[in-house]
Amino acid sequence: MSVICLASMIACNDYETYGDKKEKERKAIRKFIADSSIVVISESQFHANNDVTDLEKNEFVYLDNQGVYMQIVRKGNGRPLQDGENCDLLVRFLELCLLDTVALYNDTYAYDPDVMNVRRTGSTYTGSFVSGTMYSAYSATVPNGWLACLPYLNLQRVDDGNLSKVRLIVPHSQGHITASNYVYPYYYELTFQRKTEIYDAD
Image: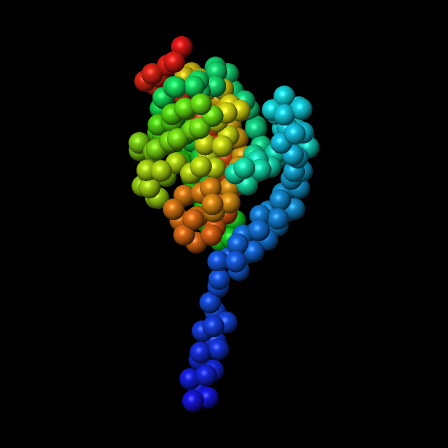
């Protein structure tokens, strides 16, 4: 009986609740922010500064509704996605899990980006991966955390060295299926380039 009780206690101690996992996630995000010397600013500060982040200060804006931290490295040339528009984007990315430091990326070769289709309806953005590393590793669904940055970026077809680029810290609730299932936060570096205009409201 003593052995059974001990085994039961050990099993109980090994079990993590959803609350435990969320706390681990919060600690991992806080540690990453501290270790990276990130300065977090509010959305009101971000908007007051013309929707840009100061790279010299290593600023990230905290997006309240999504819980995503975003740094705009380059807003890019071209124009933002318009209301009613649907287009394919070429995406080059680096992904880093903040709990186990496993990395995934497709930014080594310029000719091998992921392709994702994005639609804007009013202030709502939806997206699905058409092909690429994210599609193969996870699913066709674009993480909401990726979509959160699109209202602030200009998208262009030609790579003139000024493609839009962001850095994100994405909590599990805004991430892909693995992030959601395991309560893992992820850090991303993303570069976007317009591929094809399927429909343009203009």
